[in-house]
Length: 95
Image (cartoon, one colour):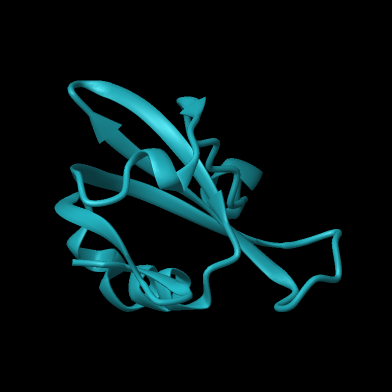
């Protein structure tokens, strides 16, 4: 018999909430992420929680950035990795 814990996606990302603007252009360790449907109907209907580490402290960033979400889905098998969060014009991206 299967156990619920074997297939349920209950990943809780640990860390204090931090604004994405506070970590711009800094190297961080990207550790994990979650994508969930937003209860707010602003733009895209999904948001992402991104778990990062800076100087051995875990933080979480909440963002609706489609670019970041697409990058995390594309490169999720590479986690964890070191990257910089940068802003180009009106969007955020990993570098």
